[in-house]
Length: 294
Image (cartoon, rainbow, N blue to C red):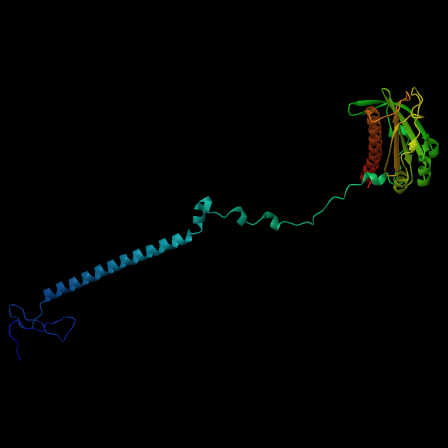
């Protein structure tokens, strides 16, 4: 069977021995065209080389990319050193140094000793005692007022230094000692008396049994005229710890004290306050000594 001109024809493929070679233009019969075969082979080899080179280049690019990724990954930890400080964790997020340190139980200092406790019983109140110890010096300054110190007295018979209803109150409380000191300022004189008991409860009892007629005897002498022996005078009564203290103030001239006698009231209040301060200071000194010793 034959086909018309231009129909498909079988060609010989050197890679397929069973194919047919197309006859040449010169009608050389079945002899192959070696030159054409060589050119075809060369072309195929050239294509292989180009494909090999291209594949190698692509492989190189892929390896380079993988290395670059590996380098970036390896440098990931190093990038933190270039992170702005604003992105760093705050101090609140950092571990506290004290968290790893030792802990100790809280301690507290012992409470301070109470001065009044040391002047509330004869067992603790061991400091020297006397009218010149409680009322030292030759004058007393209270604010802007100066008082001159006059005579002093110290008796173990408390009733002898009191009058009115005070002797009975002192005896009921168990008074063991009564010290007195007189101060003057101008035409005003005031005597302060301090009665001593063994316990604070006794001093409070004696004070509770006093009334407006419980009066300490005024103390004169040493240039101080007698006062408050018949005239109206002003008196006060108080206690602190195991001590009860009293004042009597008036005019050595014998004049009666009235509500207008402000200097007399001022003198009595000043000596009453000074007596309380001196007893408290006595307690402070002994409390301080006990704290240092113990």
